[in-house]
Length: 173
Image (cartoon, rainbow, N blue to C red; front, side):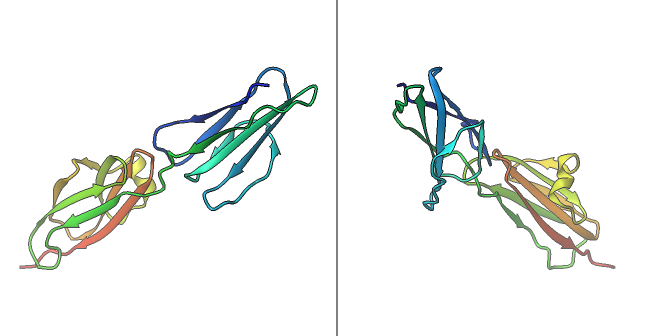
């Protein structure tokens, strides 16, 4: 009996994958199990449809049984494209000395690949940047001249997000 095929979608860096198991047409009982990197084992379960996996280095096993109770070989596939690490934002510039304005250098680094770097006035949440904010180059600069709080936002290709807040107070003459 032919062993099942385990399909992981997407195969690019992401925060979760969908696992689909394809069995030969003569298979009547479909089974799978999931073993995490820490060794947590679900045991064999009946496969009823796609699985969602959110932890890297998780191994999916699959086997099937035909109508005369012959088991297929066991197929296995390791999930290795889950990115759980958010980008790291670095802001450099003199925010301590009283000035009329300051130019800040901003950069974001990630273990895989950055997608976008943005800034906005005010103390914003991550969700704010879905439709708002000013996109900047990475690394990039922007000049702050108004008193208040500001937010820097970074997102990597897998969708992991980071924000950093800071305040600016200019000198009053």
